[in-house]
Image 1 (cartoon, helix red, strand yellow):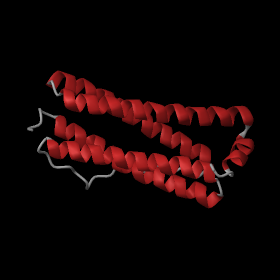
Image 2 (cartoon, rainbow, N blue to C red):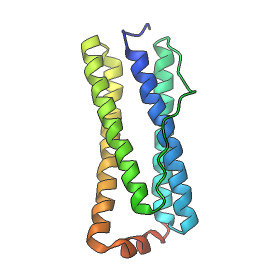
Image 3 (spheres, rainbow, N blue to C red):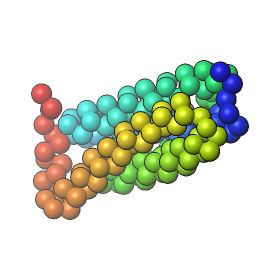
Image 4 (spheres, helix red, strand yellow):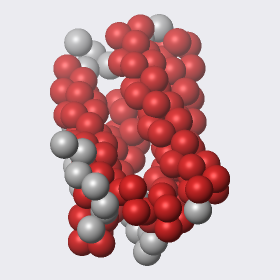
Length: 158
């Protein structure tokens, strides 16, 4: 199926951001593991894998639209040197992604590409869940203190 005007470019921008956050979340997860925060490691690593699935879906959709996925671009990976810095940089990435996706939904609506619009709507829901989780973590840190929060992250999820 041939893509509507601007849709492949839009999807490649989204792909760039997905590839960027995969790396950011993966490194944040590994840093948490190194610090002994197993629960946090597991959650952030799962988020990295979820972003990989999103990237796969975007790649597949670009190919479906007879476009060429651009795997060569990568945005700036913003690494937090502490858990709160990690959460804040991840939150900024998630909010930027929601903006990009909602702009994309608007573009797809105007271009009458409802298949891509539906895919982006599903992605927005996922990103908003990530935002909610991160905001909850930051609020928990604010309420119980960083040391208490981090002591709970040492425990394994099992």
